Image (cartoon, rainbow, N blue to C red; front, side):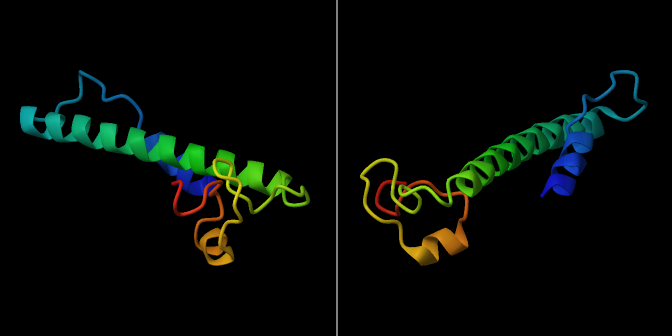
Length: 90
């Protein structure tokens, strides 16, 4: 995951105005940059919640929805380990 984030950081770097690419190619590059920025933010958020869940593994509240306080289905936790909400509250 951290390697993926490093790659996204490289892809999300600003587009230099003096790059000798055509207008359409430049527009595509700018569009791709915004997509990569969004992917980077999502990966950073996912990593933040994974680390948070890892720290709270031994807490009595682990596996319970932070909104409704009901138990989160184990299959949901396996599928989306960064989740902090049950399927009904997400």
